[in-house]
Amino acid sequence: MSIYLEDIPLNRAREKFNNALKEVGLLRIAFGIEHGNEEFRYKMLHRKIKNDIIIDRLNIVHDLGIPFSVNNIIGFPEENRELAFDTIELNRHIKSDGINAYTFTPFHGTPLRQLAEDSGLVDNDELARSLFNPSLLKMKQFPPEEIEGIRRCFTLYVYMPKSRWPDIAKAEKLTPEGDAIWADLREECLTDFINYQED
Image 1 (cartoon, rainbow, N blue to C red):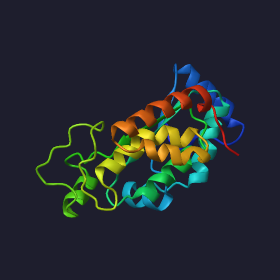
Image 2: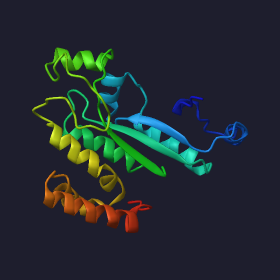
Image 3: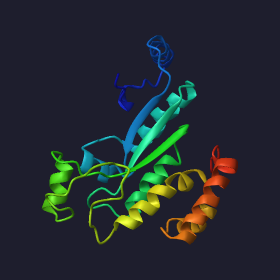
């Protein structure tokens, strides 16, 4: 069953919507936001929906008491660090009970794979095996190790206050020191900030 954000009602029909979902045995929903920058999301994914609509509709799902998670992608062709943080910022305004961040995977046969090949970001014969692997794209402005660092710290950036962001930036480093900082921050986030909402 597919549910689109635009289909979530804003008015009294919400109760009917909620009851209909319960009748089909819904336990939870996963929404694919993918990217937090409206212009970039439309350019790359052809999704013409405003961030305030995404926030509003997902807050309705939260208010209805339906558990849901949000899926995001880091490292699209032509992306950079600033654009990736637009995705983090959008997620900070969503009351989901789960957040996922995956590395963009240039699977053969997709338009974005073709774009990546045409732009010289990936070799034509290089196979994309898993969305859990580091990025295959060779982008000067957003190298694979930076993409992976942000991806692994994504939840920390979303849930922890911005005053902690300088510490989280250190945890992005894929080094023994960075790994240790990441492990400590992850434990702190789970213990102290997982329900954190900054005004």
